[in-house]
Image (cartoon, rainbow, N blue to C red):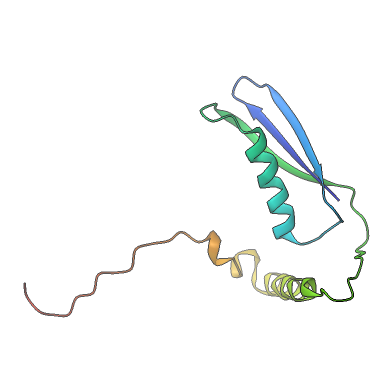
Length: 115
């Protein structure tokens, strides 16, 4: 229900900030969005950072207020359960979001003709 951010600067000054979510979630994208928002709000450009930490509190059994018309969250939960099963079977690095991959330029096409 709550996402917490810990920032420690190079001089060991530490700040702790937190944000409560509208409703508890286990969806990693919602947690990541809240953590990024906290980081953007408290980041000091040009200042060296020693530590960045993200934590969660207000943990509870999965409970979701169902919306009669919006059930889009079901698809995301099924996807996350499937990813968890794949990682249990084949290891943590077996499945990753494409957005986490480094982009490399495509290889140059060589059509065999001389210039």
